[in-house]
Each structure stands twice: as C-alpha cells, then as structure tokens.
Length: 402
Image 1 (tube, rainbow, N blue to C red):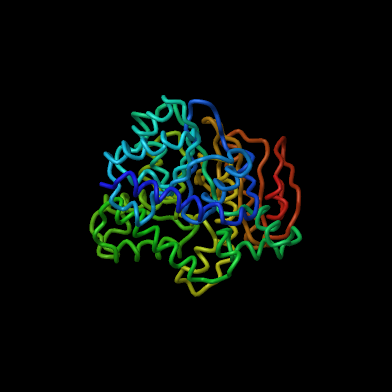
Image 2: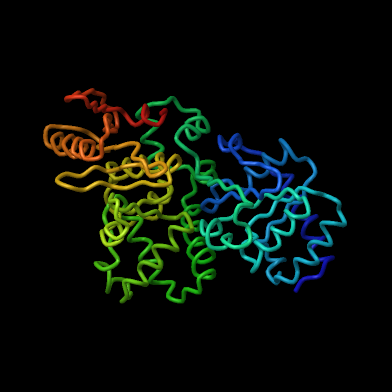
C-alpha cells in the first residue's frame, strides 16, 4: 500500500527528471506511433531500446501537459492493485487527461484500471518490456481497446545516421558488431550490454515468472546467444545446464522471447504440429548483445549477417520461417497467411557454396509459387533468371534500403 501524497511526490519527482532528459536521436518510429480516441497506445520492446526516450519525444511534440509515471521505481515497490484508487484521485486532482505509464504491467490488474481510464475519456500511452502484455494480460479487459507497436533497437538506417556513416560495406560490418542499443552506441562500454542481459533475466523473467534456478537460466541464455543461426530443440537439450525436462526448456524459450532477448524461427509448414515438432532457429534481438555476451572464440561474421537480416525482416513481418526440403532457405516471410518473400543469406558466394545457396532458394521459390527471390551478401551483386523466375544477389547495405 502507498499513500496518495507519496504517489504525488513520485509523479512530481519523475516528471522533473524526465523532462530534464535530452530528447535524443529522433526515432523513425515516432512517425508511426498509433494514436486514436478511446484506445490505449501500447509500446513494447527490449529494455533500453529507447522506449522512454520515444515517449519523451512524443510528449514534447504533441502533449505538453501530461502525467508521466514509471512504475519501475523503488519508491513504488509497494504499489498494489488497491493503490490505483489513490492514483486515480491524484490524477483527477491535477485535471490532466493525457497519461504516460512505463512498466505498469508489474502491478496486478493494471489492465482493468486502464480500461476504466479509457471509459472516462483519458488518453493513455503505455510502454513495457514484455511482449506477453499484448496478449495474455489484455485478452479480457482491453480486447479491441488498444493499439500496439513494437520498438526495436536502432535499425541499420538509424545506426548510420546516428553514427554519421556512409552507407556501405564498412557500415554494415560496424553494425554487425555494435548493434543498435542507444546507450551502448553512445558509450561503447561493454558492461551496458552485460548488465542489460542480467536485468532481463532477473527482472523480466526470474521475478516475473518465479524462476528459482537462475544459474541454469543464465547458462542456457549464454548458450543460445552463442548459437545464433543454429537449430535448437528442447528435446535435444535435455540434461544440459541441469535442466531435465523439455517442458522447462520450452518455458524458458518462451520467457526469453517475450522479454525480446531472443527469438525462435520455426520451419515453414502449413501444419502447426509440424512446426512445433521440428527444431527452431535461434536469433538474438540485437547484435551488440551477441558481441558482448557470446562465449564463442570466432567472429562468426556469416552468422551475424544472417541474424542481422532476420532483425531487418522482424521489423516488417510477424511471421518468419526457415525452409527445408531437399535444400534449405534461410527465411520465408508471410503476411496475412500469404507467402511474401524467400531470402537466402550468404556472407560471400563462391564456387564451393553457390550451388547450395542458389538451389536452396530456387527450390523454396518453386514449391511456394514465388517469382522472385533474393540472396543477401556482404558486398556482391548479380542477377539470375530461370524460366519465369528471378533471383537477385544484393549487398546487405542495398537490401536494408528496401
């Protein structure tokens, strides 16, 4: 329980601190924030990707008079569901109709309170670092009353603008290593990304889901980050990291995905059962996290490039698969259940790998009825036409402009 005067103190203190911050680099996402009357706007993304900065940019652009409240504050650690009544009295007292809430999902029944605010005509913006707040927790009380978007670390185009780099191979190589977490790009201090992973594991997973075996979770996370672009299977991991149940692995996979730390790409199939029983490819949600947290002794530039292309596609598509039949294709994308793109990634195409990369992509195109496909490389360009199909080989820095 927390008193109304304590809530008022935190609101005033946070607002003063919040408004003193530099608005920072203007994000592309600022243009696409969904806003509509009677709907809550919910922005999710990995910790430290810039959600609070995006809110500050939105506030300064459109809402000069608003209440900002970050629930991830030690002074609000005792905040309970019943305290929403006192918070509401404080909001009414201030006669302000625009509300910005950060990490409100850590308080039980928060979605009921948001629904009440919407009924009373408030404009509400919410940010959080867990994807599940868009599904499970909103399923009952905010169905049809929220607009959602995901915010990711800097895209490649944002990265080169922020670093004032010329678009090209060297910029791609730089992005492959640093990724796009704003604070890390500003400082280059590796501990920023080390502590980020630990914060996610402890605050977004262990505390939220009552995970007791933190050591096993850390070991598994380091293993998965190190193995980007590789297939992983819960059944085949049983016994590793002192985890003895496939169900526990699947649970941890889900937690890591919801926290935007890792993502898992299933094999393409129209059958959900086939997707479920086959291994998934694992990718990290920022390349700097790989650089600072992988235990690999190799640079793995090829795997990094594949992961980077995945992140570019992930900003555009919700449904991404890998394809495997006689050959393999790295990415198949879907939009509203329709196959849109087939994409192969190869750092350098040469005599040893050309047939494998080309035929894997061509086979996927033929079986899925696609007329065009793409092989993304570090710096090579080419064009292949067979029958009525076209395969383009493009450098990554050109692919990112699409």
